[in-house]
Length: 114
Length: 113
Image 1 (cartoon, each protein chain N blue to C red):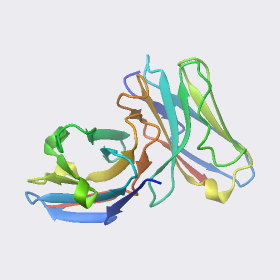
Image 2: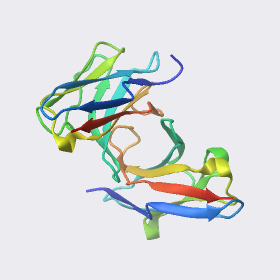
Image 3: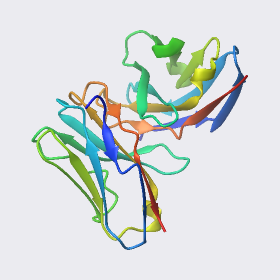
């Protein structure tokens, strides 16, 4: 069975600092991996997805994530945090690219300190 | 409309009452999904509609839960005889088809007291 673990329900970084949000997955088949973001009072929005092409995936708003099969990880990074990045971030895994069979992590709330 | 719209945004109901949640998908999106998000947990898939095909109801947690969708339009999720464990945010999403990006509504926060 597939599962997703996001380390840290809350992550706090200073404005301008590196953002690192961790996601580890378990899957018995080659996975598809997704990061979604939910800004305050808005719906979930797709940030980026890995679908077995390049292992380094670039998304919107300067975020990127690297698929590391040996570590079963898909951590989300951004070199320099901005106040507008404050949101909740969700990692999800699927054994196919279809949306509805995603298995979701519990989410990480990113807090940006001025 | 421009995005997925859900109503109401908040609903407080008494245990044992029925509730109906509404989702207006993006026009032209054939796929529609319902999810439940309990506090501190990830999203749980509930049900999936694809055009006029039979829906995938495999995620519905009990027979108190049901959902309908007419064609490619509005969907309603009904919870009968609500229980306190039904308290959660119910999210709806739609996409052009099941293999393209899903767009989410803001959700309905249901509180059963």
